[in-house]
Image 1 (tube, rainbow, N blue to C red):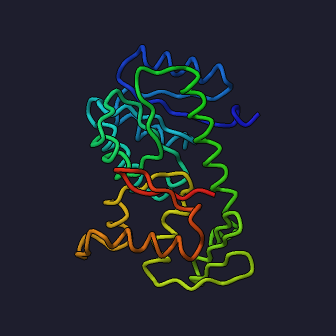
Image 2: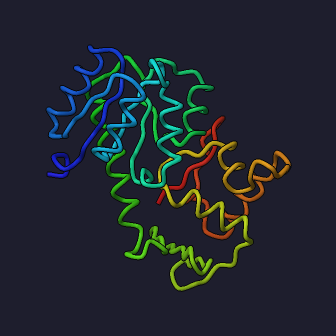
Length: 231
């Protein structure tokens, strides 16, 4: 079973949360490890390379946002999915999480069925993303789209589509992590860079151009946060 092959690291400073989440995920066949603080979590990720990390935000030593930031700075951790587990459901917390590379949010109080469903959906997304890459890792194949990152070529079926440099970079960023929400700030930083000053409508204009060229259904708007790619 796929679940038996999936390793999940749960990071929370509350024993009852660790026990509750671990029990429900092990019952579904997942391999589960735990950590009670951010520093231990980073060490364990290096040792076990989990498929998914479920992170509480409010923790001693390093909070969840900082742990996520540090994990994402290491390219070896790119395949690892990260979900925040938190009672703080305010918009600013979600945006902060997505800015540092979180893939999803699971809120407390935790309902077992919802937890298991979200975890399985995340792992399916990760598997789908891996399958979308060819053996060289240079071409993404997403439905009828193919994105050659070495040749800067995008095809829809047999038809080649021309993109400006920033359009291509924006499409590559979103498509490289299907299902993951990218905040507007993260998109600005990764596509245009922190030293470049661009207008507030720049992302909107580029998203509109991408939709015109590849179709409206690939790029979804997440109101108040940013965008994600789906296929």
